[in-house]
Length: 353
Image (cartoon, rainbow, N blue to C red; front, side, top):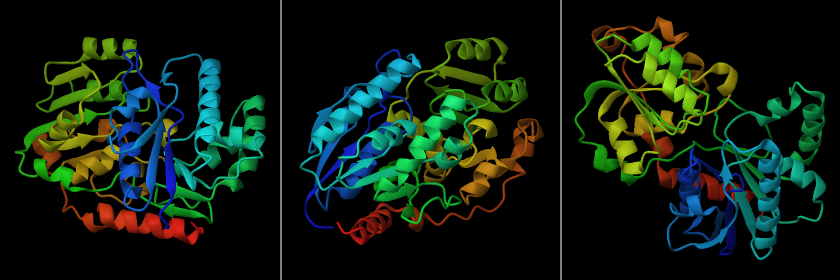
């Protein structure tokens, strides 16, 4: 890849009521910029809440943050406005990489025929199937419009190894392994389960609390709750062995909690998360915490762990849970930063940049 300039852009920028960035976007934005910084100059375009996670060495352009419970029409307007500013800001760049996308980007591109800059897009789920299977008539029309613009993308970065969506795609994991995880390698494990991350309705937390309450298994649930009534309901039904906290965890605390826990639980609902990937799944392996997850999630990502068909099929004692552990095979080489970087740069160069 020749020494030029690349923009790393985030137009969604989800934030909670405190103005804090939620979800995987901050880390993805940081890691994506880090993968390219040795090959070209970097411009990062994001909201102020995400900018706090970005290194000072990067040139930055600020766009609007989106409150994650905002009216959908206002959120659409803000994303469209952000895309206008992004494409105005990248006219001197050789490429723009959108590290977090939804249908709005493709809808936008369908109407903006004059955009010539090469575009890279990261996909965490099969949005092609999503667009083809929208239930309402108006959404199906939107979906057809979006599908018509997908050919305008130079390169797709797909994180799910089971998805083969485009000829011009490469598979890269949600996150890569770097030395920052080494500081947690000697952390002593505790006989407990953690369930962390953004709590936005994709996880069956009610099922988790009902299943494990009153057992000898300590369960820690911590993350930003989008729906405060769900948080209150969990507090009301949880027994003493379950701890629940509504907050955005700082990275160091987040990593340490996974590293000190024998198990990391990912109770995703198939109807909300099928064909999607999970950064927490990889982080649990980086930090040597055994993932407990639906079988389909582990299989889609070619990762071993304790898989279940239903939460109710999981043991209710730590000794029985420990009996389910099988020998873990996880090749960290496939996830090391230097190998991910080489693969990405090669794919970009193959596109002529």
